[in-house]
Length: 397
Image (cartoon, rainbow, N blue to C red; front, side, top):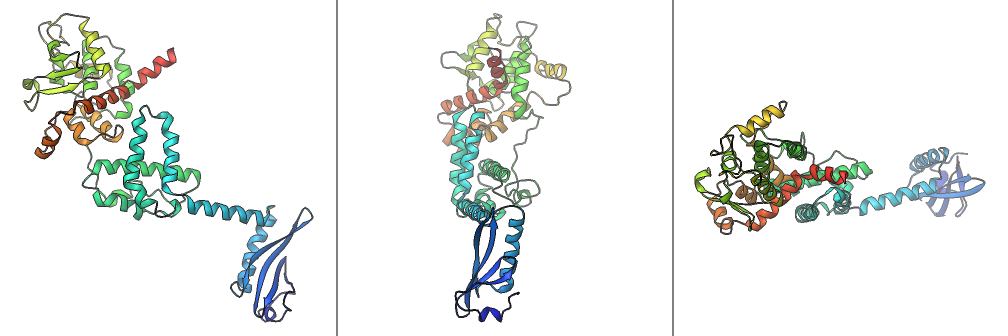
């Protein structure tokens, strides 16, 4: 016979009474008791607690019982299922953003060619994201929390926080794939954060090749045994302007110090410029100079003249007719790579490009020209540009 609220007050203390279907009530004191669900699996009886009365009313007990009956009918043990759910909930409450970020870093580690990538990832997230996002479980983080990371200094250090946002997005995407985060990715930019924040994009006046395609292009370019192809390779590896490269002379190269000293008259700002050369750039020049004994490193068909102004441009238009990028656009390719992949300070990249600096910045950065740090940056960039070539070489061997 079904229980009623009145009957809950009348059974003898300690005696279990049935509501049907395995739902039982056992009084433990006057107007107090406990609910349970009894069922059998493989001939063995089990009893599952469903809460206490009056905290859990008769109606609520029946609803809970119905839910557990569904689990039982599906062929699962309700007690074991609840235990697993509770364990999962505990894990969810314990799982922090930083925990998943470390998993993402470990997952990305095999693809990174430089150990600095891992340090930069971890350092930026430790500095900006962890202090805010680790205040609550990962599963409870919202877009508001992500904005708390970004908004305070977004306009001040836009490029740095843009990379932090990208890394947060990767962490949430990983968590969603693992089933640890069920909401919309709060670090997505389009139709999300872009409605609140403005992106200070690095815009070039010339169409550039996306840096993700640079390894392919550089490897392809190495197939051409022409002066213009060599000059374009050198242009890419140094992030220099066309006019700086095509009129380069052997005496400008300090082979011992691996420095290219570009005279002021060939620079846009009319100030001499020192370019630290990567191993690949230095080897390229040495190789080209072994092929001739002319006054210019990249001579034209007329030995006494440097490469023509449009030679590299014509190479691109002839050999890559379906592409729209320009020679000058490779400076933008470098600039965006330095910000988004190399994770280098924007002022360091600006110096490498010989761009005019704010007077205060110039005073702080230009005393030493930061040759060693720039050399490290250009070496990283060369390794990135030549990564497809290097991979092909490894396969061949």
